[in-house]
Image (cartoon, rainbow, N blue to C red):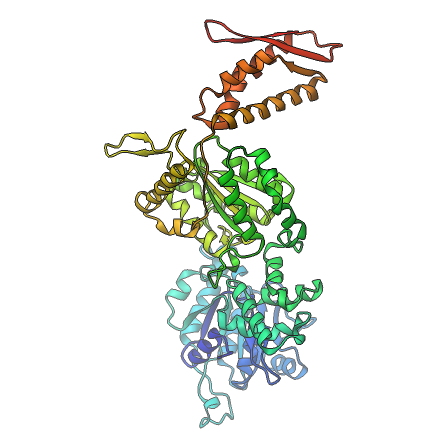
Length: 615
């Protein structure tokens, strides 16, 4: 492959016709640099000098706003030549210099015939505070640079053999290193035909593959593998570092060396670098044991959803084994698992997400929830990703990207996803496909170690041919009927209502449909909630709360007669029919010295106000 970076090849091609270059983009990266002993990765300045020295350049002058001017490379003969030609007064290897003095250096470089040379203005983005609001001195500096770009001429050094390619006329270039082209006054690059913009992009696959070949030897166990194995893991290294600079690949190799991560585990080294955590819960043996026994643990908290729980555990097992997206060659960066929980309200969708968090990470605090009804407007997307550059608050980042960077191993729940603005839903395409998202300030959050869960009530109600809202499924339908109708309604919503079938394709077959709660399950849910109330009274007042059988029977009838709102509806009814009157009754009841309190009767007057009798 061609080892020379593209921006270097462009520079070589344009040196005979361009006098100045604005080099922007990935300027702080390392670059593949061919050397006599073999290719290596080197910083921009060394890579640039390797190329220019072969063009018979004798030295470079490098200026930055902190140290001033210095010769490069820092070798005695080079420093002596540059000092003589430019009358440098070096102090500790550099010479402090104002913008006014720098203009004179630029003019001398462009006309220097005794030796080919160039000027690199480093940190040019920091020369002035605001490129669009220059003071008089700054404006004069840039006008002088513009004039110089137009008046400079190609140089043939004295004594050069003009019959050879190296003796052809070339400019002594001035290179401005900036983060973004807009860090320079716009008129400077727009109005001068002699100033060319060179953009340095992130490395492509071929460049990363060659870099992996160079860095592979830093991994423990690299030399022990066969040539085929080495090539396999080099390709894996290059694939998993898509979107990263070569400096990141170098850091990953050094991290692997320090952490003792073998080359065959290069994907672990890449993930360790991306998420900033070396201890991977997904690799723990105990997690497989916990998931193997997950059914009773989950069903203790999520009642009556056997089919949904079974499918969820199947997807979880696939995630633990690292097989998510295994059918795709580029599936390694996708989230560990993607789940779309659909079904009636109050049947345990959110509770199952919390339960999975507790099961996998042992801590519900690893659960990150976003109520998507708060993102119904398109502009609300800035909250998730942060405001675009230049807008107020862009440097704060986004709520979603910040949360995932803080907790890369987490369950991320997007509640009631259908209520989000369609434009915001587009952001999930990148998460589901590439496992990463970049916020407004340019920082990337990686979702490759997270489980993404969407919840939705889609399919429970649909619009008929007259536009009226009707119930699509209802209590009493078989689970197969509920699943079929809900899945069909979800597909219609994404395909026809949103016209975004690609989102549905990314979710795939990970739709988990929840069933309605029946009478038997509602009684279990009621008993669990009542137990929680008794425990709370015991904790708060050190009293044992006892309910007579008649009160318990009356309460369960009151709380489970309407199951349309699921377990949440049972809890709401229990609050109004028991917790509120219990609070009033306990407030007035003499509790001092008592160990038990019995609720002996429950009453409802003509105004449907409930009261309790305590003994």
